[in-house]
Length: 295
Image 1 (spheres, helix red, strand yellow):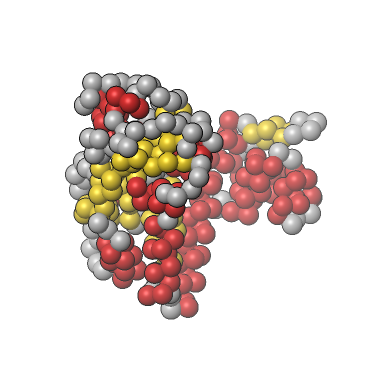
Image 2 (cartoon, helix red, strand yellow):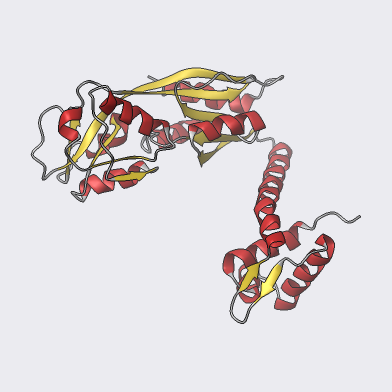
């Protein structure tokens, strides 16, 4: 039995993403007959029709959808394997996959990467935006090396958790608002405010801050990206509660104002990583570096 041909799989995924054989041929730098041959051989290998060819666009069959969904994982694993072999051949230490949850400062991570290049040029970090719960699952499955996650997290066999940061939260408000010196749940509950998506720990943290004061206001907007929440405040659309670390670069901007919260609200974070049977110098160096940026 012949194994799955990854070039043919890549062709199918390109057609699924781009919509036509011609667009896939152009993107992959292949002749149109080669694209057609890839799909013909792949369908023969699978024993199933994978595409429905229309007059303008090409659509996936249910079988094709399943193959594309799982095939993306195969291509990613193939890229990782090639990278691993090339790193070992060139004497470089390795690639460390770090899952980053919503709300981790976009100011902090570039500093971590810059410091890593200075100290360990043979180690690369691949950052992936992933929620805390998913990060814990992926650590368990071995598809992440380190997770920057909300704390606390449930104890999981084989996964170690160490406290990392405990950042204070602040209110980011439009400059046009007549705001008090300190923002309380009572004051903010009557204004338009945006929050992190309900599936995030940050959403629960903010909801609990309101709830402890006897309020349960619904946010005007929910998003998983701090940058969007910040832009809403800058555009005078809504307030947002964010980590102080996230808004330091906006402290003196004209379009927004930053206020402390009362009662204070803290956002605890932890580093999660797999406990391996043997040492992994690359992962250890990244953990040590991240620890230096803790608080």
